[in-house]
Length: 125
Image 1 (spheres, rainbow, N blue to C red):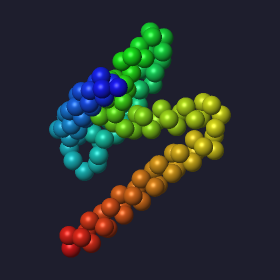
Image 2: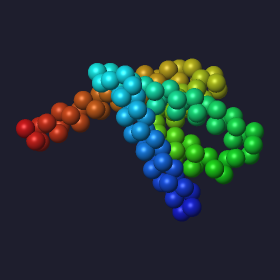
Image 3: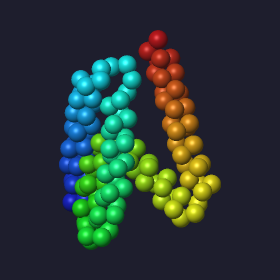
């Protein structure tokens, strides 16, 4: 358990650093104004998650999955895990659950953000 936790933590540090560097690089390339860095990280992270699921399954690499998938990609973008979860539900034929998961995560996530902003503004206003 502790070994897995440490590998996830190390992977998370690597992924978060990669996310930061991606945002910096993309902003230098295209400038500010739209979150292209986030889009790039989400798309690239989702691509890597899809590739890793197949590669690790075929190569028996499930021992390094916590480091790579939860740690590195989780630190880089949680969107990749969200994408994998949504696709897994869809692939299982749980279409209603997949749609609810996508809709609920996006809409309720934004609602949670708005609620957090409102509460914090109320406290610090």
